[in-house]
Image 1 (spheres, rainbow, N blue to C red):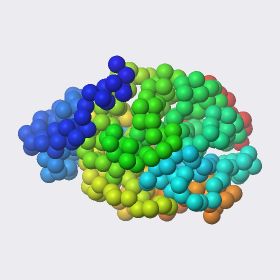
Image 2 (spheres, rainbow, N blue to C red; image 1 turned 90 degrees about the vertical axis):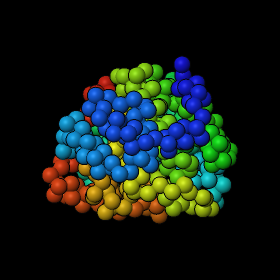
Image 3 (cartoon, one colour; image 1 turned 135 degrees about the vertical axis):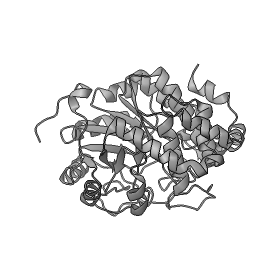
Length: 377
């Protein structure tokens, strides 16, 4: 059974109602199973309103499981925006095709300039980000990977969904990981917020992680954009998706991100409330569901919140992020995809982590893992 078929077996509204209706006894039962393995029913209980009084206990268990698996470490990475050209009309994104903004696609010299700027900040893990457009398809991405591979040990992408053969080809260029956020698993909300363009095809997007697994991509990143629909139901479907993938593509590593809507170019949209406490509840529940998954905390969040929440199951953090193409060196004034909140430098974030007896990890991957060698820097 494909994930799309599995997804269609579950009504989004019914799932939200079932999660909201869990009891304190359900939460207690789930917490009692935290070390032996949660069911998806247990996971739903930990996402429920009934779990709110248990958040401290969830946080303690999440911290313990994370330290046992990952130690007192935090991987640091940065996004590198290659383009803000996009063919989609999406209500929540500054890059949406309907927004009349200056568009930019980095050329070879600008890509290398960004690489040198990021290396000077200490980064060895970089996430390449583009809008969704044919101009920045497989050939453009392959060229970018070739340009960047001599500078970094790990290269990931967050771009338009591609076909399986495209992912296989990019893996041959040294691609380590692919992030593809579903945005929302609510079919009705998905249609409301994706008005036109290739991203409007919800089934093709849902099938993307399966194509990645079959292509042999070593790490797959999942996530929902919280604020578009019922966060509890979206989080439950994300857990369903993760469990499905872990069982079918078990050689692959997984990461989970928790993006919340941020200010952006274009019209404001109605947002389903999803605050910091809800983000912590979601992250802790996912950690208890999957002790092996990497959990990422982005610069969308405020510095004070990140300084409190980083211990609660997270294993990776972005730092010093720029969400505009060329933002580090070649075009610092180009349009952002969204506004970041934690504006501290990478050195400041690393210093804070060390002050908390955590080790900031700049490198935990090597090109040899991808079957590629890297030139001397």
